[in-house]
Length: 314
Image (cartoon, rainbow, N blue to C red):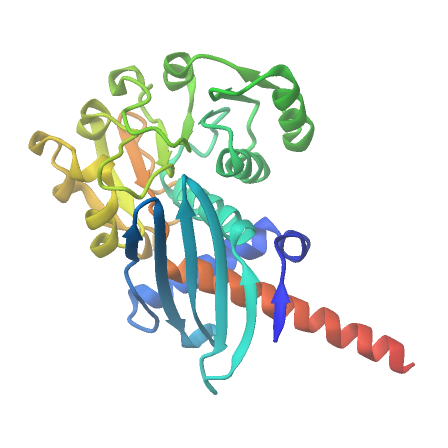
């Protein structure tokens, strides 16, 4: 059976195509034309196994992502099927797909809820997800600078990101970044809030993507209290996993502010922006994202293979 590696997947994927296929998948899900399973976790000692799956007939794919977490390290794989015939199509490494799809969904949510003229991106946590978010946001918004904080950030890392993003990148304290960012991405492994939500500037869009554990939160109550909207991928899964929301005080009004991504994507770009309020997007990662992007990568690989065979035949 075909297996696509993370390196191959990075070569096959690009941000506009990933964003397009994810937007289509979420709209189909909202219309009842696609389905997904909540994440199931099984753990003994320090070894955790997680599984989540989806069926997307409109894109002719079904599949599941399976991954282990051992001492905090993740190892992912996706099994992809043809949704019409049921035939197994491929297995795929899922580290790259997880980076691409998480950042793409944050961008899709921000296109509706962030200031269309945002100039400053803040990134708290500069691991694989933080880097992926910085790249996709710089490709989508006309940003003027990126401010980053991470326990291991240094000038070399900032310079590398600056070359990739094409805008100035500077390290700063988390509180300073929160106060200046038009768009703020939290992509850390922190179990406790990273900044004081009172410091966020009016109109800020916050994408919290760092954790899917009910015992961890990157956002404090002040941030959630100020939020006019809290956008989530799928309420059924998010409200069972997102510590940012589960641990929030009752006066944050989380349930009254929730909007699922499938509904949020019905808005025109910029339509959800509130210049005086805060918009929060809380991501935990859902199966429909992984399977939609895996399907895109598989189709592109097959097209490339067909083109090579046709060339060889001549």
